[in-house]
Length: 126
Image 1 (cartoon, rainbow, N blue to C red):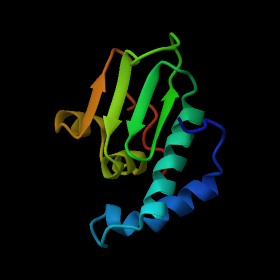
Image 2: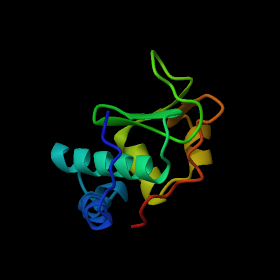
Image 3: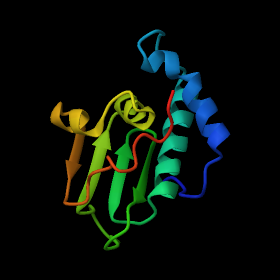
């Protein structure tokens, strides 16, 4: 699990800007460390903005965080799980893709009654 401690907004913005051309379809795949930094920092920012342990957000292979207030989950698979790929997550985090479309298109799997991040997205705008 990634840490939920606060993220420096400048550091988050720099990490996202480093991969922004790729997100917009104007550049080849970013280097793995750049992609990992953007995913991890944005997930940590989500956990800081929506503290709690009711929803687990997974973006394999880079990170997962627990967030959103409500009943705390302690063992096994949590009842509220969101999973997506790094590109989709970063498109959501930057506002290039909206939550409803991502879920409807099957780019995000969201199970559980609290598995909706639309209230907290986007985290940063390009």
